[in-house]
Image 1: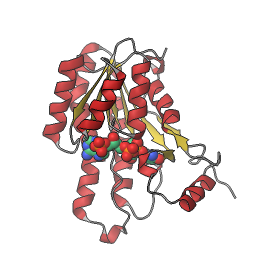
Image 2 (image 1 turned 120 degrees about the vertical axis):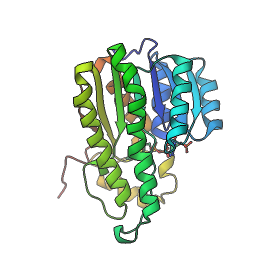
Image 3 (image 1 turned 90 degrees about the vertical axis):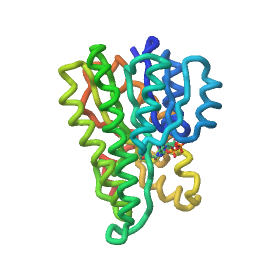
Image 4 (image 1 turned 60 degrees about the vertical axis):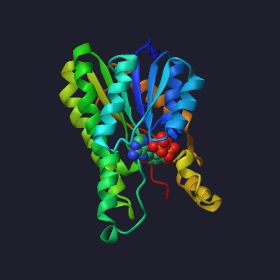
Length: 249
Ligand SMILES: NC(=O)c1ccc[n+]([C@@H]2O[C@H](COP(=O)([O-])OP(=O)(O)OC[C@H]3O[C@@H](n4cnc5c(N)ncnc54)[C@H](OP(=O)(O)O)[C@@H]3O)[C@@H](O)[C@H]2O)c1
């Protein structure tokens, strides 16, 4: 049962890529969807196309006051949230750990990890009161592997997986679930700048020999958010064409 039956789901990072694909799929499956990101014009344009069951609320999730104001506006518009897809993310910079900018490290941690904690603190009390709720965070293969040249991203994505498990265990008695979806290489605007030869090298690293699509990720996100996943909590689910669990020799 992946029909959301009018339940309100808040999606961050909904102006592009994975968040946008998931917001569209959620609306198609009967949810009322609040779309958060910084680019108000993109959100307004998309929400207008999706109709009355979608609305955009612009905020930088790394700004606690702005995030909380957007969440309040969203719940004033569609009512208390049944679901949160905390998906907004920042890639950071590719630089060695020992010369990585401390300011950028802080910013990546704030956007990719601390903002998720803030959003959960703001929304979970109403889920507890309602006796149902579903939280999904977006991790990365960097949630499970050390990778060179982007210590902030790796730390933030390990952190958000850990946070999802901590929240899952605390909120399980209240019938609120929390899971982590792990994109492998998903073709989104985040990959637009990659030259074709590098894209071909990435494909060779994937057992399926291709990147995934935002819609393939959104299918799993919608399932994990939905009441159909009622007994699924504290899980991480990779959508990666087989990368993480295989070794090709
Ligand atoms: N694509 C992949 O292969 C892949 C792999 C591993 C993990 N991920 C994760 O998947 C998530 C979505 O990425 P994507 O691939 O869909 O990239 P994307 O197309 O670039 O989308 C990123 C989204 O995050 C929003 N965002 C970024 N910083 C924000 C901020 N400070 N406040 C509010 N919104 C912010 C962006 O909106 P605005 O610019 O409008 O604010 C945009 O909607 C991220 O958490 C990323 O780390 C993706």
